[in-house]
Amino acid sequence: MPVTAAIIVAAGRGERAGGELPKQWQMLGGRPVIERTIAAFSGAPDIGPIVVVLHRDDMVRAAQLGEVICVAGGATRKDSVLAGLRAVPSQVTQVLIHDAARPLVSQALITRVIAALEGSSAAPGLPITDALWRGDDGKVGGVQPRDALFAAQTPQGFQFDAILAAHRAYRAKASDDVEVARAHGLEVTIVEGEAENFKITHPQDFARAEAVLGGRMDVRVGSGFDVHRFCTGDHVTLCGVAVPYGKGLEGHSDADVAMHAITDAIYGALSAGDIGRHFPPSDPQWKNANSGLFLSHASGMAGERGYRINQIDCTIICEDPKIGPHAAAMQAQLAEITGVAEDRISVKATTSERLGFTGRGEGIAAQATATLVAE
Image: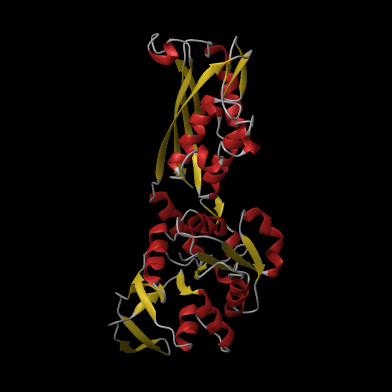
């Protein structure tokens, strides 16, 4: 099974973009450009390790980029890509090389490039639709036929060993990695690019990118449901709050049925499975664990994949204990763990009219929904 790494090249200074910071560190829609680019790849299902190539002066910022491999780049783009290739883990078989200044790359485009590799190389391009002129001292000196011409984009994908050998052998300057690959005899398949996947180069490109982000509406909704039976005890833990009661809840962790439902709702919105996938009940290290660990992990994963938790709604189903007196404390606890404002968290309760296991007082159930919005 191929293992695909992403190399994000961010070692340039981007002076044409203006601003006090290099363009990859400037803000776009409330987040640095480079963080948006990383999020696009970390959220892609077929991407494994991510290597980020930074300018040496920017290595102090590496810690803010999360779980990626950071390496210092070189004097040229080709030198930086080679540094990134050398930092790729040994299990990687193919690699995508992408410009950090293209933060609007879609996961669909990433998937298309990977699908087109099949033992070879692939890169996205857009057919040229405008007329092309040759300039001559500020005047039109001729017309260039546009047939079969494409505007190159990234990510550009290659078999790892082949592109590493190509970069080691190439001695001249290169505009991109396709040029390096072709000089080494590699064939490159063109896949369909995307107009929104443009490279931020000039100050006005930030406004264009902001407009694209404003037009995107990527909303995800997940649901979660959990049940725990009563056992001996003197309290139940719900949404991180110890509620005095003449019984406890049975479970491998702290049996916080409400927090488990919320956690699964977030995982569900991310298409990331459930608590059992990330924290197997067969693993003794999670015995009696605080369920806040699970919720914190799910919330962190949402952020890493470029999503903000916009709203949480949880319904606790039981005859007793009474939830109302503790609901505000539960909302506060959930807000502290997830970073979501309390007025965007709902904790409420209902009975099952004495029907079923909850009606018979055999346990507590909880269901939850979580709404995530792409940042």
